[in-house]
Image (cartoon, rainbow, N blue to C red; front, top):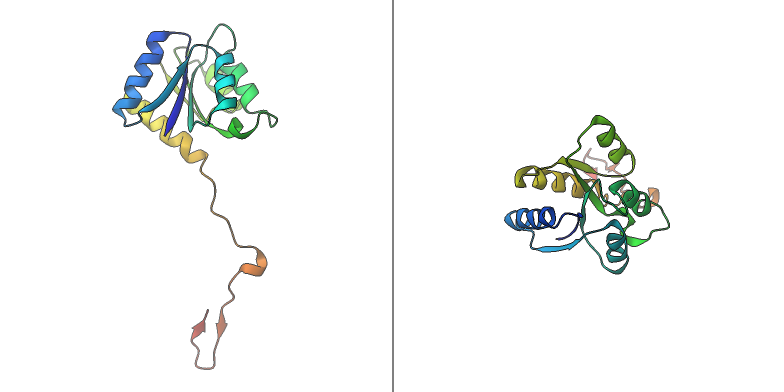
Length: 149
């Protein structure tokens, strides 16, 4: 699993990377701005985006707006976990409305981070393909009452 961490605070990035490593996620990349995150996501595939909500250039809200736009491309449907120290109900609702899958409150502990990532990834798992109508197996009874497939 690979995670892109976006936070303008180097310490917060290092702490998140250490917590992810503790959870068994060793493949992490960190960037300091939302603009850098957009570039990385255009160039590379990641399983999860872990982003701060308040950043100076492009905020978490701005980043979600770009990512969730259908024109963004292959990584537009990435699992997103927002980290914020400002956990007002308005911020939580806005993050989720803009397409965040989960929100965690800073300072984040590894248990909460692990749960949030698991939930976010689960939301992005591809559903199993349902058979088309002509592919559905019909059940028929034979003469002795047994069901044939």
